[in-house]
Length: 81
Image (cartoon, rainbow, N blue to C red; front, side, top):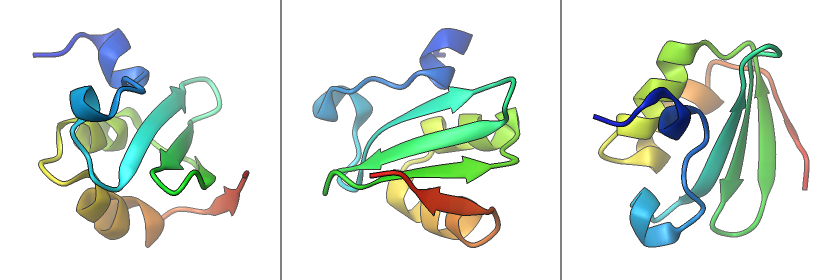
């Protein structure tokens, strides 16, 4: 099982992260903000994200599907880059 640091700051390395859609993510605990960088280099911030959601993303078999079903449709977000 990954330790807490691994869950909060997922690896940038594509193969290590194991997603065809999500390149990386970073979670800002105090702000409850999740920043996701996609393979197409777009970056989004999601607000009001709890730690369980971040862990769910980290351990999801399909990061893209998890994002689409559990994050994108239920949380406020803004495009960063």
